[in-house]
Image 1 (cartoon, rainbow, N blue to C red):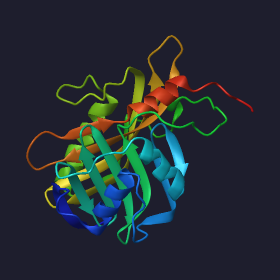
Image 2 (image 1 turned 135 degrees about the horizontal axis):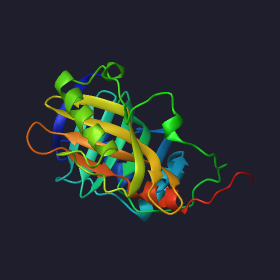
Image 3 (image 1 turned 90 degrees about the horizontal axis):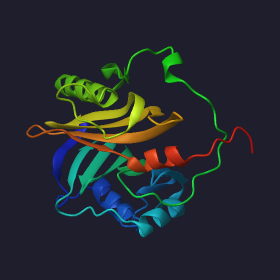
Length: 238
């Protein structure tokens, strides 16, 4: 994943950034930049296809204006503004898979079979699953910072680490996307574990991370995923 451009205000618009701004406003990009087989994780649901995705954004648009910050690489794009983040996989400048982090809870989740799980029984031990060799476009110094911050998300009590503000009994952090773009970097993480409650409830949600050359790192956790996990019924069968 090579770096195409660094962090910037959305006033300097690439094709992918312009298309993402259209999608975030609930508009279909004019040049087909939103691929037919696109998928979105956000609003506490998972949506497939253009119309379901655009329909959700029409209900709760994310503003991508001049004050939004973007980190764009050849295969990934992160835009952050006003406590929300939108992460996209890019394919020749087209939008494939999308993640909205920090949006409201909308729609109805798909019915699923509930499965018991215990991350402490995972054969991959540790609070963080991250191997920088999986991310060829990530600079070594960015990888070191990402490792430190992600471990802080998995262990919120770590000194100096940002807290995701999740009332959780246990948290595991999994880095699934990461790239550098000039002096800046972006990453997408899965946070999973069990919520702290009388009945420990499994949860899964996403977090976006933006690293800038100057200033503190920005971490946004998708609280909609926490809400959905907390409300999810136990359905071992239909």
